[in-house]
Image (tube, rainbow, N blue to C red):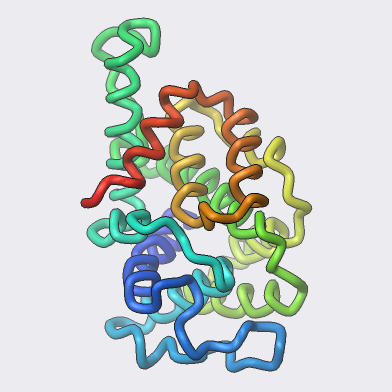
Length: 237
């Protein structure tokens, strides 16, 4: 499965979508599942390659009408998935320095997604996409009609039937931070998964904040590392 390419497209669509509309669903777009046009005003709001428009459509359906963190989308403007890796690396490195040698063997740099060979980067991408989908479901807005629309939009970005089936399965899974956290095979992967979740939640929502708290607990994130990840999202690029 080429999860890495799909996730990169979704993350690269975030700045345009969020920056121009102020929320995940562009202004004038009716809620999916209520008879609205599934494309809405996307074509007039977004420019560039068709894949960017499709990615924005899929992302807007995932996020519903929620507003994401003010700086989260902007942080991904240049580089998509690679930018997320850089943010995770900075947070993890800062945390290592705070913890000293106890955090990781001396001289060992964090192995975040921007520093990995393709096969390992694909594993990280798989875990990050799982976390992103789960975080998007945390407000409970994705119903059966919404899932069908998301499937249709994602199918425009990937012709991989295995990946498409996996995404559909993830959309139908009950929200379970314990299951999501199991995908974290390394501490760096856990940090990336939490960071991706931070980027797509509405921080004003009690439900979504509670989900983040439980996800952090299940990922066994050190409180200081969690604070560093949140700091990276809040910083202006």
